[in-house]
Length: 169
Picture 1 (spheres, rainbow, N blue to C red):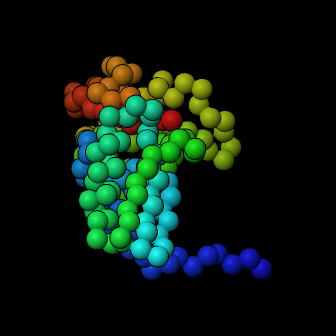
Picture 2: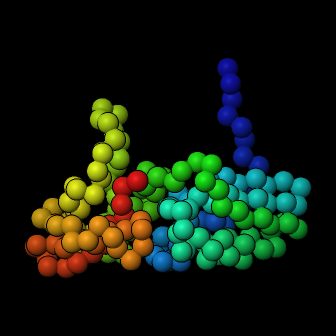
């Protein structure tokens, strides 16, 4: 029988602290809830955090890195925060709590890219988004290119509100 590794106290404390680091563009959602924290190594006075940018060239990466460094300052003698593309970020990494916080902030969360009995969507921009304001399915894609590469702009026919949706990646 293989047992799961027991999290170390410092590593658990780091994860808890990272849950307080807001996304620079949507401060009601943490970097943990967005799934951009890939790995945490914490031992012997050293903390190393790997971040996964949502897209290459994401303008928020540097602000996220600084936010993580500031939050972890004082938890260890050495704090290193790096970005990595070793594992690609996907929208499926957004936690259930993150999806609810996005919705509560007026953003439509991305649709799930893959289910147990389906193949990945070939063009995930085509499905309409559910309006985060009124819950309507009567929405249209207005612009596939929102203010950042990871978001698109939609319009709701029922409440007549524009909104952004995180793209399914």
